[in-house]
Image (cartoon, rainbow over all chains, first blue to last red; front, side, top):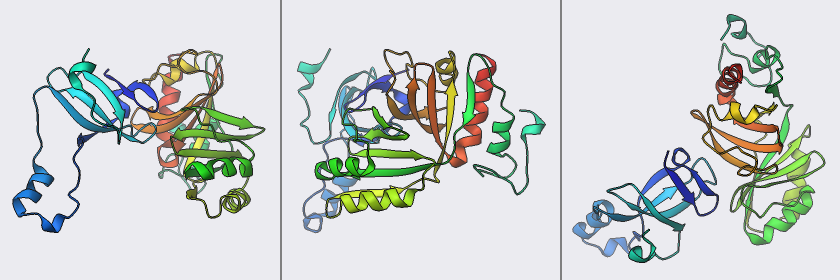
Length: 96
Length: 199
């Protein structure tokens, strides 16, 4: 079983977690000023990289908190996890 | 499961999860075992407290048990316990007490401070699982490392048991308390019974 390191609870089995989509997507401050294309981009378009991906996870059957993780979408390897609100770490430096 | 455990009728006892299975009847039919015994615990006042820094201290003082600040730990004073569930979330347990006076005392102590206090006394029921094989039995449905090093006495956490969410805490090296939502209780109980057969 995949082990995910919750920033609050420590290492826990994958089954306690839920995926929460791509991280670091900020809602536009003034949505009504956007064009339809820009709004569509915010709502639906994601980077979908092959490789390191910053994404949200929720420790739903644990502390219940959302946090961010950098995961390799090819190998499913969790490079690192960090609390919501913290900057995305430098991936190359933190890669193991 | 034996047919005797499928008791229906108006007396649904401690929990009344769904017609046809009474938790009270299941508990009565549970046989003690040298390896791991399962026991239904009496009704408990349960309050969920969520709050910011300023309200945490006063809430603990009003309850008589300090809210633990370390992740996944619980504090006990007499019969009362406070379990850490999240960075700003605790559950306050007072077995055999009514929730109303506790609720009033904590609300008075934290008046004006940002917090949320919710009475969830009826939401869940608690089982005690004790014996040298208690950890083994739990591991039939729970993936955590329950060795004493990884899950010491005084540790608590929300986790899973099979398809149900539970709150698990270790009260002694050979004793765990499983707190499970009422409607999931017969499911978890019966799976624990099944696991005990192999212990």
